[in-house]
Amino acid sequence: EPEVTQTPSHQVTQMGQEVILRCVPISNHLYFYWYRQILGQKVEFLVSFYNNEISEKSEIFDDQFSVERPDGSNFTLKIRSTKLEDSAMYFCASSTGTGDSPLHFGNGTRLTVT
Amino acid sequence: GDSVTQMEGPVTLSEEAFLTINCTYTATGYPSLFWYVQYPGEGLQLLLKATKADDKGSNKGFEATYRKETTSFHLEKGSVQVSDSAVYFCALSDRADDKIIFGKGTRLHILP
Image 1 (tube, one colour):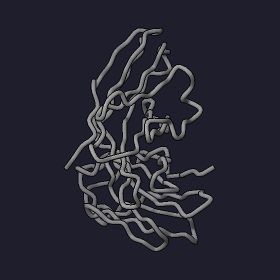
Image 2 (cartoon, rainbow over the protein chains, first blue to last red; image 1 turned 45 degrees about the vertical axis):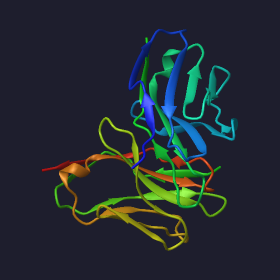
Image 3 (cartoon, helix red, strand yellow; image 1 turned 120 degrees about the horizontal axis):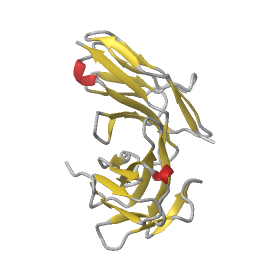
């Protein structure tokens, strides 16, 4: 079964550094998402992306965050200047956007900001 | 806005016990409802779903029925196994092309 793949599985960075989290959605999917899960807490929506533009973003997704689909396969989340509170598990998800297709999630990237 | 409320965990049961994890939702329309499961060290996997009232989603012995009158989607399993130990998330989506909103998750521990 096709999978959403995310790299790296674990990223450690220093506060103030930029990080890029990478995702390869399922190939025939059109809608892409990033979610965040701070350790032990709920899974929070960050942003959705369709037709090469952001379709919705949450309050968490402020100016330090950006998303991009640089080619036909990758979907990236960039955090420009990381803060300690950005430490979390980041999940990428994709879907076809039709009624029978819920979101398919990757295994996540654990981001640790020191 | 739309929201999902699920019972606090952790829930600890013995193997072969009956499981219920309660979930209620608030939504302006008629959302689709989901249960996702997160096994230790892994991502979120869709466990089951229901897209309209009175639908029953089922998978791996788990069931949940979409109850519009009580705005609930409780997860049940008749006989749990140690391998069912995981975090279970109730979730909803207003439209097929919309984001999913998750509950806080319920951690389930099954003792052998």
